[in-house]
Length: 295
Figure (tube, rainbow, N blue to C red):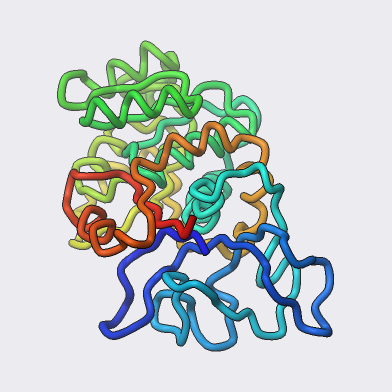
């Protein structure tokens, strides 16, 4: 079993929320899979609770059991050539994919993603896979901005050193202001994958008339909005949570573009050093995405 993960909702719970593994045994009524197949798993569908987040099982173990397993619901078979550390990204990339779906991005969209962490990078890949004409990713960490170009984004903005609005106008052109207001970037879609109040402020200051702001990030503190200030923009603010349908939709993207997705993973750690991996993942700024593997 090969896993990534998020902190559980409670203590004393089996860990490992983002699993991929090899099938070693199949029940008599299970179809569309064979022993030896590589699979990605929907951790939300397990009958004994969410895998690795409060349920009876966690993927940080040698085996997990999918009861009454059905292809397309509990698991999906993937090609063996997709590396395990990339396959383990299927669950978090479904979160990113849902955010892009919520944004309404399509062929020709000009988009910007705030935050070049795993979800932001996944959103950049998803935007390009849907035909976005130009994707910009914004961050303040040079190593993350370098990864952004490796996964296929068209441009980056270092927001601590550049004026975001001016740079977006250079990259995406100008859209006329509403009721003789100042021109704004012609960017169609803004995606918040950073989760800090300044991102919301910047996006709303930049967004064109009837632009879309999709919030995928978790904001741990309240964010103040001046509704009068944004009234004339008729901005469309959309929230994005989880992956209602995307858990195996994103698998196609991972299969096609796994060489891009592999750049999201910063550290691959063998199970013998799992505690070190957990400490690494929980240390702010030390790593971007840590995956634990059994082989």
